[in-house]
Image (cartoon, rainbow, N blue to C red; front, side, top):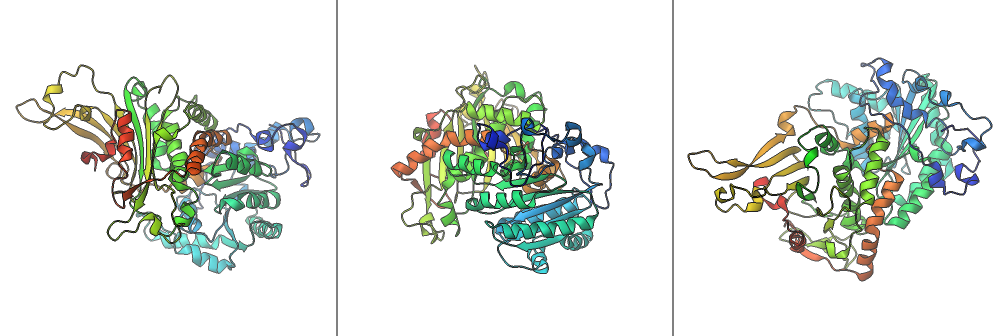
Length: 583
């Protein structure tokens, strides 16, 4: 695609075509994945290893709001100039990272520590700056003290950690301003330009993280796009979930963003996709011959994706009550896991090839109906308060804090295989895992040799991918109990990450922020993928809210409502995470 810089007051792509601004801006960028493309001062490396990851950056070289299509262009950049990889090389470029909403908890606890971790690992360019932008009034020194308390190093960092923190904080700057007024973003642009000029680099790349409430997404994106776009490099904007509350609000949000951002510049982040075991999911499946031939309806009986927390809303009930567990966890985190798990093999590891397959499988899913859903809400137990005891929760709220959902995929690979999703708060333990139950061995000649009390279904193989905590992959197999007799029992072939890999796993935000720097969108959500996901759940959510469906109560710290067990039995399976062997 050839792009042209036009007047800043131009109307953009959508003004001369009978298409929506969002669809007019969608394209298919090429973004190879390179993990360590940038270097810290002590790790200067050859630029050649970085060049392929920088090709995606060339797509973003013009200001966000100043794009027209080729037929409208009389003075367009040539494709050779636009795709000049050397223009994105870090020896002639600087990087500015802007956290909008810098005074919030997410920024303080997750985003700034992740940026520092990338710097410490040598994954940021030598010339980088970090800017905080929020409504709170702070000086640069106050801002540095604010984020300095949350910066940590890996366990093996040693004495270098303190020096690294001190240097990192000298590269951090703050600008206060409103999210919905141009003056603040113009001041931010001036502050950024001053620091970028000090680097002496010809090109300035800018990355924005919108760590703000969704009701000001569009205004903040407009401010960043219209007043803070890089004039010489790429500009990318990260949008944190929630992406709306249903199909209509999600579409409205996306189209609002598209008036200021091209699709390839918009990075919709779901931090759960940055988890180590989620990224390993495609590797496990496609790099191991033993699994892919079994990854279908012929051998798999059910797939269960479980997300449980052992704490309640704890003062955040007012925010949670606006969304509920289905919007907060199932429609995004768990559905994204299912899409990666169930998709067809992509033609390559390029972001668009993988995201195309995810969209296909989501569109193959049947819409969720109320008959395949169980809703629950935790109540008080002993010293633990119930959901309605949270003073921030509206009296009499029927918002579910637990839900179990049965999903079906109507394609040749998965027809007839139930995908059971379960998520809840205030349950007996904290965990997130994928559990793949394989079918029983037909005509099993060892059936009579099973251990006492061992059900035939328990003898089936099961693959468990534990996302958190204590990351692990293990396969349950039937094995002979040692001794002179012939008795069978179930055991595990177990890969525990903490014992197999003697290094600390990176935080999900570290991985995802690095991907944005590298222009890799493989783990980010595309517009059509987002809409397809909302279309699956919107009718259900509207029915629940219209009918005010009462949730089944369950005690704080329990395994959840009894109805979840009936839902599983409806499909001839049981929740295998309740098996004591896997505790």
